[in-house]
Length: 414
Image (cartoon, rainbow, N blue to C red; front, side, top):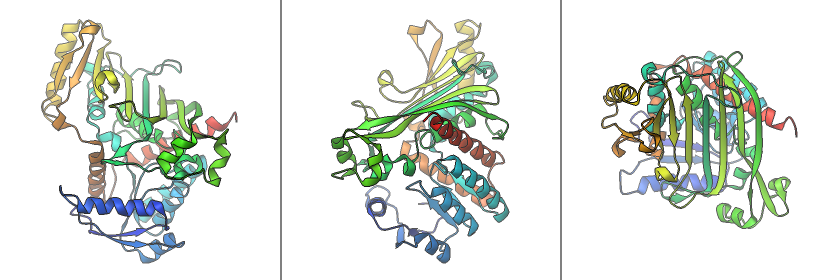
C-alpha cells in the first residue's frame, strides 16, 4: 500500500479472463497472511469502458496495462482528459504508435500531466552497480565506441513462456502470442534493454532521438510452439482464429525473438530479446550485459555457473598490473558500500588476476516483484514535485524511436 494512493481504485476494462485474472490477483494480495493489502476495487465493465473512465474521472492517475494493441491510444485519450499516466511497457509497439506517442508527450506538457513508463530493470542491484562503476573513470575509463561487428555495448535477455510470478503460474492469454497485440521482441521486452543502454551509458543526460540515435539493422524470428505447449500455457484447446495466420503445420510461429544493432551518440550497441518455452531446471529469466570501457569491461552474467543469479564482474583492460587495478577497484567498491553496505570483491582465479566478481549481500538486492514498488515510489515523488527529471521525457522518446525503427527495419525484407 502507498499512503499517497486512495485504497479505493476504479478499474475499467472489458469483461473477460484478463479482467478476472487481474481481480483475482488483487484479491490474493488482500488476503495474504504476510502484510496484506487493503485495495477496494470498483470494477466498471462494458464495451464503453474507456469512455466511461474519461467520463467518470474517478481519480487523477491512470495505470494502463494489458493488451498493447490500443495502449498508445489509451495513453493519448487519458492525457487529453487531463489524467497523469503510469504505463506498463511498451507504450508503443509500431512506428505509427511512436508517432502518436510523440504527439501525446507534447500534449502532456501543455496539459501539465506526467507520463511515465514502468522500467523495473533499473532497480536490479547488479544493474545499478554496473551503472555506478561506469561513472568512475579510474575503474572504467571511457566508454568505447566499438563497431557494428564488435559493439561496445551488448545486452540480451531470455524470457520463458512457462513461468511463475509471486508463486503462481502465469496464464498466457492467447493474444500474448499475437505480436500485433503483444508487440514483437524488441518493441516489447526489448524496451527494457534499450532503456538500460541509455540509462547506464548516458546517465542523467538528455538524448535527442532525431540526432543521437541511428538504427542500422534489425531482424526477428519466431519461437515455435506445439499445440500441446500452447494448450498448457493458455488453457485453450485450440488456436483462436486471429492466430491462424501464424500457424504452420499445426505449430505456432510467435515472433517473440529479435535483435537490433544501432549507434547511440556514436557508440555501437546490440540488443537481443529472446523467448524460450521453459527455463532450465533451477533457472528462470536471464539477463546479460557487457559495457566495454578503455580500462575495464563490466559484465552481468546469469548462467548455470552463477547458479542462475545475476552476477556482476569487472574485467581489467588497462595496462595497470592486476595489483594496481585491484587497489583502485577496491577503493571504488568501498565508496559504493556507503550506499550498498556489505559489498565485497572476489578474484576469479581462472582469469589470472584479470577479473573480479562484485559480491552482493542477499539483503541488499531487491526481489524482482519488489522493483515495481520502487518504480511506483519514484513516480509518486515526481507527481508530488509536479515534474519528471529533465532527461526522462526525451529519453523515453529516444527509447521508443529505437524500438519502432527496429520494428520497421525487421520488416523491410519481408
